[in-house]
Amino acid sequence: MISITTILNKTHFTKNDLISLLQTEGEERIALFEKAAAIKKTYVENKVYLRGLIELSNICTKNCLYCGIRKNNLKINRYNLKDEQVLEAAEFALKNKYGSIVIQSGEISNTSFTGRIEKLLREIKRMSNNELGITLSLGEQSYETYQNWFDAGAHRYLLRIETSNRELYKKLHPADRNHDFDRRLQCLKDLKNIGYQTGTGVMIGLPFQTHEHLAGDLLFMRDLDIDMVGMGPYIEHVDTPLFQFRDLLLPVKKRLDLSLKMIAILRILMKDINIAATTALQAIDKIGREKAIKAGANVMMPNITPGDFRDEYALYHNKPCTHENADDSTSCLEACVHITGHEIGYDKWGDSKHYLNRAKYSKQ
Ligand code: 5AD
Ligand code: SF4
Image (cartoon, rainbow, N blue to C red; front, side):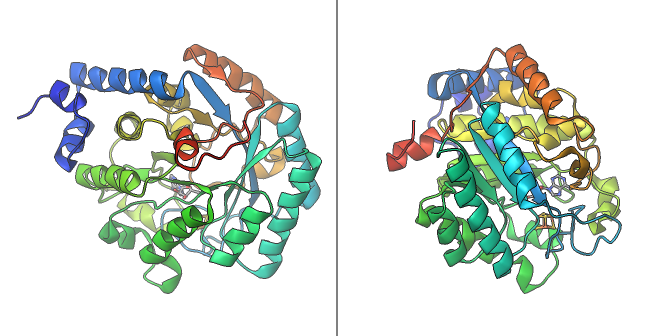
């Protein structure tokens, strides 16, 4: 068998190489993380960029089998922030020098929603004098909608593929036209084509998921030449159909470890992309995000949704910081980033270097 050191020194990785890296333990595991840290230092430095996360609404028209805010979960209270609340949150991000925001919501595609987003985008751009960068995470939409939002000022878009394996995708979603793998893939291509910095990601530690699937996910992201990635552990939610397979799951510690390895390997594969330390990591380990930054992540998304609504945006259980106000989160961020030997890139959009190298487009 080929040694981990040999694999780590390669410039082109096979699926089997990636599977071997996912299975590392002990010293080999440490060598993997050291390699990822060295690459990160060279290509994206020790900066961590912030995106203030605004969870606009937990209303969703879809029924993904793993998600706590799926349409058929009647046990949660649905909310929809008022425009003033979104603008206030954006102002908070601006004042606190976050540099950019993410607007996330359950998937809605009627024209009153898409028009509302367009208006909000223009308003945030105007209010911040184009200082705030805006990432959207609003699911699958038509080409025209993506284009309108881009024209209104959004420049980054996150749409997770969830898993790049079609068979596994089918196990995680209802078998209907509303949950179609090919449509999702087309959306990612549309986003890239329009000119967004395009982000995707997967869940790690899903029932039925193998190391081979995860290695396939890494190759999928590389082959799609993606600019940013947000991926984290799957966390079971009691009020979802997928909960019935909880006995098949890895212990949470293992899911965390696998997530950190995915981040480290992705950093080695795609040296200059943006990788987020996701909230789900923090949900299963208090310092999960810090560990992710050390493993190769360079973006954090502090939640700046008005406090009253955070509990309701429960994709999974144990969502962190839902009882804190946004100010608490800011000071806890400072501390946590410093512990990792990194610095917060205040007042910066923190665009993906990968994208900039491709498209030669930037504010700063
Ligand atoms: N565990 C972890 N992540 C989840 N998501 C949804 N449900 C869960 C869960 N149970 C993630 C999906 C989705 C994003 C908004 O949240 O990857 O794209
Ligand atoms: Fe809706 Fe997204 Fe949850 Fe699917 S994962 S049910 S699209 S919020």
